[in-house]
View 1 (tube, each protein chain N blue to C red):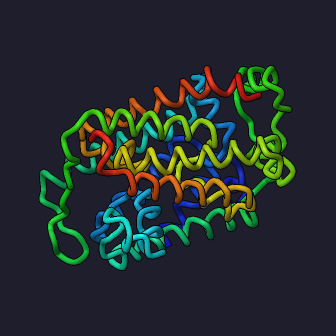
View 2: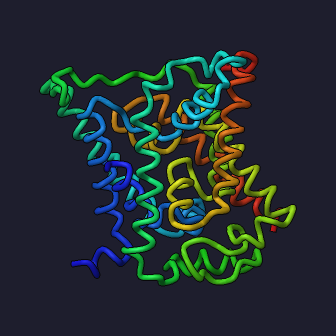
Length: 185
Length: 130
């Protein structure tokens, strides 16, 4: 049983669990949307004094911060107890495309070229991580949600704005993947 | 509890991986589409059932869905900016923190800058087209 859990979870099983999480959150009177936590943390840090957007009762969102802490713990558990420590098995076409950009074949779930300490402490490596985060944080609040809020919760409720946002996610993602990343590496 | 399950599923489905996001944006595997597609398909059915039978939550209140404000420009522009960051860092906000728990501590940099990005949005909110 544990061996099955240690392998990569299949897409249908993972997708079903994500839906289960969304419905359990709804059942407990909450909703599934992760990026709201970024706004909540800014507000808790006192940004509401100077910027109106962060002036709201962030304590009503503590349940979502608990969800965030839980997610960190989940990552830890998955790595410590449910990991097989095998290299990620992505498409050979992707490996080949990334090799042309100078990425070596996957050794773990994340490329050392981006996420190792050595990479993060080069100027270029740091700027890539910083810009990536900046764009995600700005974009998710501008669009009013991230993958969980729009692609999962919003599309499940057949919300047209969420469809536009998801189309936007892909336009941005494709521009980055095919036009900008080749310039960076 | 639910957050922990979310963290485990993000890690074990490999949705937290930069490689998986690259594979998705290069249309070279079904994996990420399968995850999101399954979640949305089941989600659409479940939401329709909740609405049809007026299912109540744990506290006995009707489950409400909050329609998003009508607009195109903010969803499209915001979405594009988000997508640029998603493909570059390989992480949306949830998987960022799951990565930190997983042991990729450099994701802390990404997360802190995502907080900064959110702050910048809040600061300029009234000047942006919505």
